[in-house]
Image 1 (cartoon, rainbow, N blue to C red):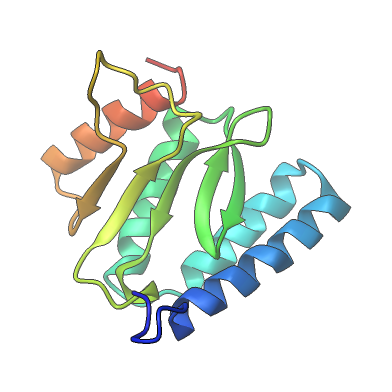
Image 2 (image 1 turned 30 degrees about the vertical axis):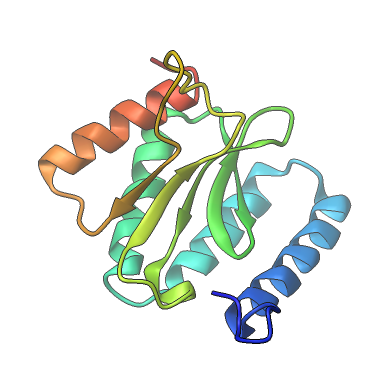
Length: 146
């Protein structure tokens, strides 16, 4: 995603600016669930299909299966943090960096450890009954709900 001069792309610079604004806002509001929920819903509403449909599905699953996670945006993406404010799971829209698939990602706070190797992100193109089952299981495990 870097440009030919080795710097950040326009999309990456915008994501960094979004993250700086999020950090400033978080300092003011702390771990306010309602504010985080509103920020996520606003971010999702700005997405185009199919990203919006996927993000709505992820939000629904996290809300149902890991309700203790705190909703917030992270680099402009819908994300969910643990009680220490550490991101556990996030959704990155394909359109954000003009990639061919959206990403369901898990950060270090996710409790996915499985021996010497485990997945920390998945390409996501559709929420079918099968992919939804897999996503739900990973979100439960990542959040310590499984």
